[in-house]
Amino acid sequence: NGKKPLVISTWDAGISANKAAWEILKNKGRALDAVEAGVMVTEGELHNCCVGLNAYPDRDGHVTLDASIMDEYGNAGSVCFLERIKHPISVARRVMEKTPHVMLAGSGAQQFAVEQGFPLEPDKLSEDAQKAYKEWLKKSEYKPVINIEHTRGENAFAAPPVRLSNGAFNHDTIGMIAIDAQGNVSGSCTTSGMAFKMRGRVGDSPIIGAGLFVDNEVGAAVSTGLGEEVIRTCGTHMVVEAMRHGASPEDACRLTVERIVRRHTQEELKNIQVAFIAIDKQGNYGGYAIQKGFNYAVCYADDYNKLIDSKFLL
Ligand code: SD4
View 1: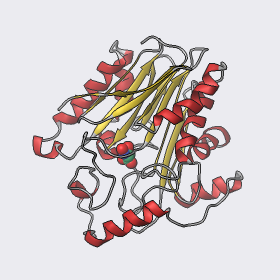
View 2: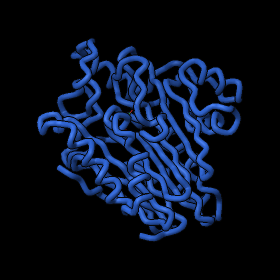
View 3: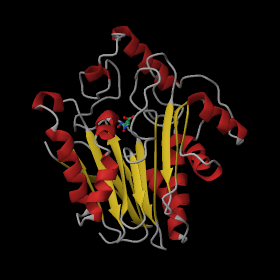
View 4: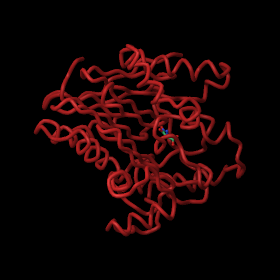
């Protein structure tokens, strides 16, 4: 702990994402550039259930993407319900830098992306996604039973994301936070959201203070898991505020996880996973999850980029 520069990101896809971010950080680049370049790697992956255009679709068979980014000045940009654009994180950055707004949605976000020169990709599922969608359709109960379809436990889906024997899911949303050599903090988050979600569903990832929050005086936090729970608690805002009042990154994440857990019965909690990771201004880092199985990638040297098993509450 106490590393600078430092980049950390959610899940195992974070390892290759960190690598790209580290190239920028180690050359004294800006944390903002690092967190954008980092998650772009994940957005471009061919086999990823949960990030980018090759990810799993909504119930109607369309991939819809959410992303957000924040810089060291407290500027923020995000897109949600965005279709057919390969790098939502870069569109989010353009929203932040080129418009007077923070958030663009759906066809408006897509129109803006195209105007900015982003290619409109074909409206087509990847092979993995097609397979998973077909599987899901077999049993799909086509009704919005909220406590069923937006969870990721074994019972929630007929198709992957698959819970592995170690309790983890095969891949997930990527959130990345970094501090650069100048001591500035930035963060990014990008996802296809919950697989087979209702059309139009937007998660926590593009919502500032829910899926991502950065305050350059204090640090940054990003979340993964069941977005509805994170939105209800303004999760990452809470993590950053706890650090402002003296909590370590790990304690701040734990306090926020505890707040979510207190709202639920043991039975409900079986199918809820939420995790936070955080860094502070000193380059300390930490994470905490509701359930076992969450991990995050930590990188602060050419020869240090490691997957850490998160502590968890239950
Ligand atoms: C969402 N938080 O859309 C995202 C999904 C996620 O692990 O992180 N899954 O709710």
